[in-house]
Amino acid sequence: MSALRGLLRKEIVHIRRDPRTLTVLIALPVVQVVLFGYAIRTDVTNVRLAIVDPMPDHATLDLRNRFAAAGVFRIVAVVPRTENLEPLFQTGAAQQAVVFEPDFGDHLENTPSARLQIITDATDPNTGALLDAYASSVIDVWQRELASRDVVSALRRTPRTRVVIVPQTRMRFNPTRESSNLFVPGLMAFVLTIISSLMTAISLTREKETGTMESLLVSPLKPWQIIVGKVAPYLVIGFISVVTILLEALLLFRVPLRGNVLLLLAEGGLFILTSLSLGILVSARTSSQRVAMIGALVGTLLPNVLLSGFIFPVESMPAVLQAFAFVIPGRWFVEIARGIMLKGVGLDYLWQATLILGVTTLLLLAASTRSFKTRLE
Amino acid sequence: MTPEPVSAAASAKTDAIEAKDLTRTFGGFTAVDHITFSVRVGEVFGFLGANGAGKTTAIRMLTGLLTPSGGSARVAGHDVYTESEAIKRNIGYMSQQFSLYEDLTARENIRLYGGIYDLSRAQIRERGDRMLEQLGLSAVGNRPVRDLPLGWRQKLAFSVALLHRPRVVFLDEPTSGVDPITRRQFWESIYETASSGTTVLVTTHYMDEAEYCDRISIMVAGKIAAMGTPADLKHDRGVASIDDLFVQLARPA
Image (cartoon, rainbow over all chains, first blue to last red; front, side):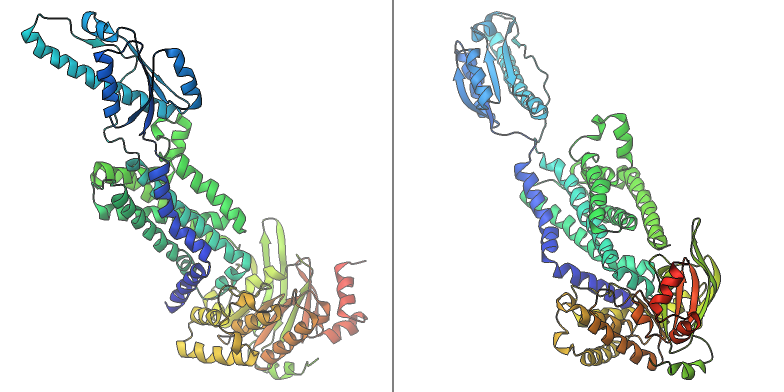
């Protein structure tokens, strides 16, 4: 056992003596969370809105105020004609425009319908769709309030046709509008993959490159001791990262943690194990650090980022990629972490994903120890 | 130069290494083809051959890194098939890369390898201190190995490989990339080790070094093409140097 302890101590010294790598390992989760939390947001605030209002009246003013008060929009221009919009969109001064038809208020009161148009910059289709939905929801709420006011007025005055505005879009409302809720679980998968797979693969192949692996192999150390000695420190670092990301998410971004913390940490541990075995597998198949790095990037990091549902929803992938995603460990971890954090569900709902992740881990672990043992033959 | 220890060691009951028809194939390729040889206790045995002749494969089988495809071998009295654990405890190994962790200090390397071979803390401290003193490295024992000159690193690696007092030590091209003076000094430490009863099996492709060995074997294409003391081999084959013999064997007319 003292042999294993010495091996562990040695690995810790390696990590400590390489301050650049250590900095990256520690700073990575922190920086990523801040980056995703503040900069890379998929939810929209501060939408630059232009208004085309050819004949302002009480109705258009009322709706304009609604937009201004919604908190999401900032009215950057009020122009009389649609043609005035073109330069605004081209320079990016406006992202969205609400165009009232002339006599909007009059039509609203006296005809079955009044028309307005929502124009959205769809350079980024996702953002465009989101803006569309926000604007529609503002109009929808306003319209419903008008309708209920009419009911009151109907008691006093002569009955009148119900107000109907016909927006040209459907309403979809994202209740919390917080992308941070979604990105934190994905981010955990991302950071854990880097630390566990990449670092393990690199540190194992480094021993091959420097020839020290042979010295370990001819020693009385058993293969499992060598593997444990090499990967255990990264397991610990990975676990610290999980806790760091969680704390940051909870304290800085108020991401809800509705489920069991212990379950989440346990699932995190399982995923670290998965990533570690992937790292061992990569290192067993490569003999230089550079190749190992590329192998870990292409073989673990990219799939875990692109196919895990972290950025692109698995449901909207083509069937082939969905089949691929089925065997991506990150996909199951993201699903589990989102389930625990956002939905507050427990193992009774997550046992399938956990089982898949567990079986994958066992298979990878078996394959990696096997290839590690037979590597020299 | 000192073939004398042979007679003393030959009286030992068992040979340090005995291989009989040891064979290893990779697919259809036979890397080591029925080699038979034995190394006496305390002998410096040179393992010569061109790159790809099968030296490394043979060493890997003897050190338990590789399972033989056929034949038999015993190292330090233990069978390579069934007792690789016992073999590993009784051998030392130094590769051409010197196998030290460069970001660790000399002392840390000593502590690590001492721990791996189950030496006690006191043993590690005592042997480590003595080793550094003998090597003249006491002053730099706490510096990363990376900072040491190549020659010192090589000596340190050799001493670390001997830390657990192995009965047989395998040196795989221990002098590659080292200057001639350092090489000569290194061979002196090899003799010292052998005279204390440790058997040394050393591979090299420096033919002048072959002359320093008690006995040598020359491998060509997986087979042992010649074996004996350097003097006998030169005499029998009528060549002036081992280098000439090697060329003769490697490129048959």
